Image (cartoon, rainbow, N blue to C red; front, top):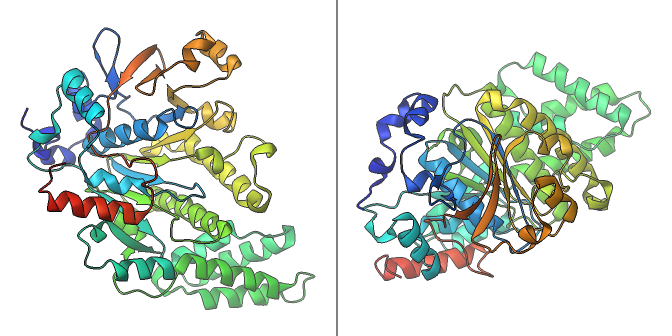
Length: 435
């Protein structure tokens, strides 16, 4: 099997109607677009339309590996793929997708079960770029490793002043009256300065101060909050940077957002929420397209916990607000060519209103007896699922499946920091792409 990227997914097809092409190819035997094999050795494909997915399973059950396979499929289908990793350990392992899978067991399964030999690729079909706000830590990292061959896959992401004002107006923690002041200031300011390029934070703060004067709100505290959010999201000045809009337009890469270079947990949540809000609003409002956005959220229960017991007290405001936002996004975004893939450890970690919108479930190893009964399987079936298998639940079907391993490399245990990828990429280049 000799495959180039064009042979996997012809470039001219990306300019056609995606749905029409997928309808034409959805029943072909293409293992690169399949997530697994049924017990009858038939290839299993994800739904072709903009349906939301839920990946459930215990830690170590293989959720991250499965998500990577689904990312590959969505990317080869011509979708714009994003991933957000909100976990406080701030993994940024998706950079390894720029390398071929070097796991001998996975490569054996790919070859023997799916007929895919990684060594036959004429060119590497995946490009994953990791984005971070331009914090001092990130800028120092870029400077320290500027001569590393893998540093090109790490880029600073910046917001425009108008983006920052939008984000602050939507996400700033406020009391009831204080929130009305900020909202009123935002409405007045954006009405007065209609061109986004002419907006700036100092003018917006003046509106907040003027409206807040004479009220019982300590408006100086509000301005301090605005300053904090602004500086977290803006970061330090840097010459080479990528704007959010340019990144969204780029379909030739998998765009990964990491909080690795942000120190304070609160600041990580500020930036994470900013990404959700701005990617969603830019996709819906500003760009005309006929292709799908596929957004993966790892450990989604950290963003949208179902109950108070899962809420971290110090971060409760952001978790509550993100839960509300995700409930809205997943309910209305299918008609907007947006599809969300959320992974979580338990079946009841996420709000039921979010789970109900997910039309595809990938169930890994779990220990919840009540959930096994809900699925109509014996609890031991869920408890004993090997890392290579999952139960797939679609709109009209349910079956156990042998999962296709990812074609790209997955980070090994402990290889979560950016430096681990840089080291691996340099070894790969030195060995002429041969592990």
